[in-house]
Length: 118
Image (cartoon, rainbow, N blue to C red; front, side):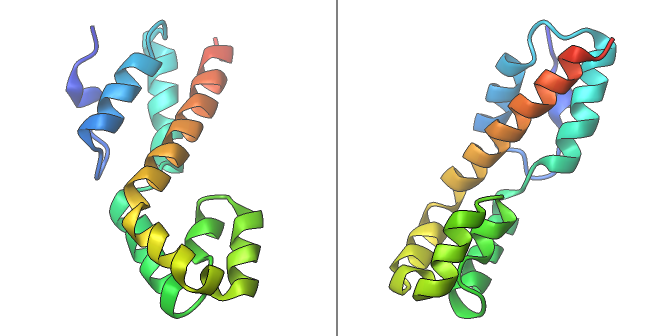
């Protein structure tokens, strides 16, 4: 059984930790170390995404979407002024959900790469 210290990333939430514990079942010790190394470099913190959302609202609409790898939405926000600022406000409010969805996607990618390693 995994112990919670395995996922002592900066800014990790209980929801993310629970997801990670379920997601990495079946990995060997070496695969687990590889997963942690890859995932720690790819994941985003909620506080960072919130900051990007605020900066995106006032300086560069869509910044948070570019940072989260959603280039199409970032371009749309850029050319529409953050969808007339309403989209930017929604992103500030929903920054936790945006971050969790991004981190889940990156966890899946890291799991697949770790699983393929020997």
